[in-house]
Length: 38
Image 1: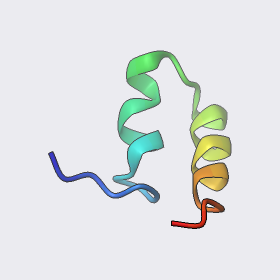
Image 2: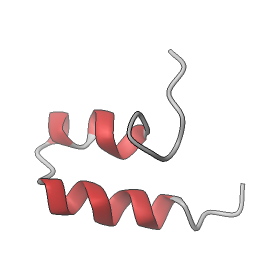
Image 3: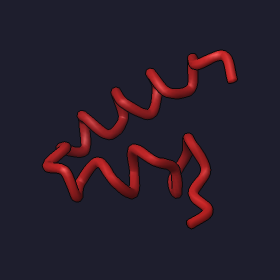
Image 4: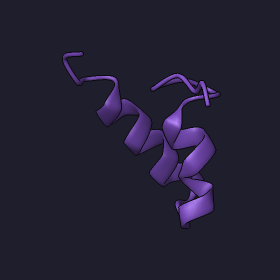
């Protein structure tokens, strides 16, 4: 598996809806993940 952390093909966009996240949730999660210092 090779998914980026953020963006249109990132973790939130791919796995969020599978776990019940709404479109707003996905945007929120993606923004939060983009602040991680990795």
